[in-house]
Length: 52
Image (tube, one colour):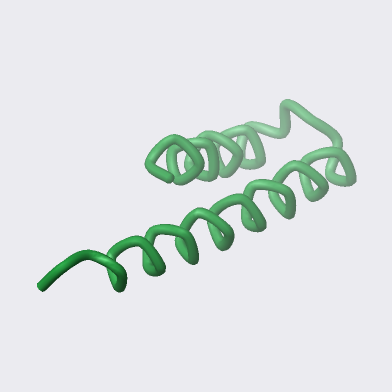
């Protein structure tokens, strides 16, 4: 999850520097957002199932 979060950071920098066209960058950002959502969900499920 940390790597996906870092990827989002770098995508924002790439966007500011205009290294990629807008359409391609939006696709990458949406995919990265989905990965973060899925990983967050898994992390929550794992933490909820840990013994207390």
